[in-house]
Image (cartoon, rainbow, N blue to C red; front, side, top):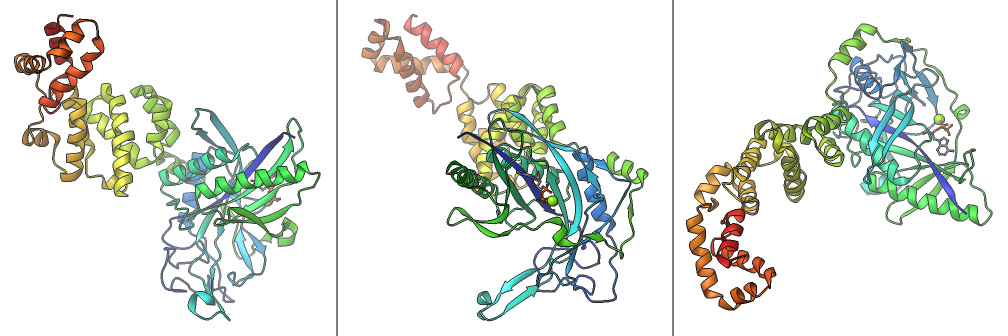
Length: 482
Ligand code: ADP
Ligand code: MG
């Protein structure tokens, strides 16, 4: 039977604030176990949480970026459950009154489809600690708790069930990562757990309006694993439904090495958590003036940048999307264009998307560490357009710049890579080549015009690729009498 897949994601982004959400403990990653703790995040009795203003500011940045409705008053709620990494016995979260509702995230798929996914809500909450099981420490009988992460601020971003395939779910998540990084509110590192997601997925018969029963998958720590887990689950559910079975709501874990999801527990419902407003925290009022100040300081966002690259520079949408996926890459490209001129934008895009990204990949470095500055790349592009070097020679100039960090002019000068445009000089090499290949000349003149490539190749070989290709073609045609 034919099913339609329905996916909704609950993404957690860890905020890059200096301190935790309700106390002054450091929110930095790592540290010795329990080094970043105090009476509040340890859950000792008699102490009170105080909301970190920076957490609210970061949240508002994202809320504005996705075009959500910012509540003028919102509240924190206690979500109760027992686990040894949760010392208070409840997590402070938001429930009935989140700070932001609605808004949307937009992305372009690899095959050029534009997708817009609506958000249900964004709310603030605290992270829990982490358990270290004793076998890792040579003592299988005990488990230890490290509360460094307890109280670290998180945003939960809940999407509507509008995603229709695993690939789009991955693109959506990537776009969220791009956004939080542009806004400077989270590093979006999935391996370190600063960006995590629970994926809800169900199938329904194609054409049906009613959603099927959903399953929630946890524990996917990379974009690839998110997609793989969803693809696996799509197949598993369709096989159950095909054989007349039913899907039960449950929470499943992704097992990366086995490539399967496994049932972990039956789904818990909101009422199981006994939510109620946290009486230790006053309702949060978001002052409109403050909101306006934050709005005024917002950076140019990826969608606006991508549109600008398309409109101002005439870049294809695909190029614009790739170049704006990282703020730093976009800034690099922008600087290349400023130096080389807007007419060079497409050429610059080809170099950045091709050779520069390849270089970063090979050296496993970020664009900020690129040994070739945007100005140097721009100058190299201008050397090509001015006819000083050929496009082919430019590849070796690029490699030399990557190695030495020197300016392209210096490299061209030192290595004698200047293109030969002098027609007399090219002409004499052409004469030599024709004289030493009389058979080919005869064949060419007898109609085998494909041999043009052979002659070009011979001259290029003799000049180490420095003959100006256009001038060379003209001279060859003239001397061969065609
Ligand atoms: P729950 O009450 O189980 O927490 P919610 O309605 O709050 O469910 O939704 C949680 C997440 O699951 C949201 O991201 C939502 O888009 C998604 N979701 C809801 N229903 C479905 C469904 N039938 N199939 C897939 N995803 C769903
Ligand atoms: Mg829910």
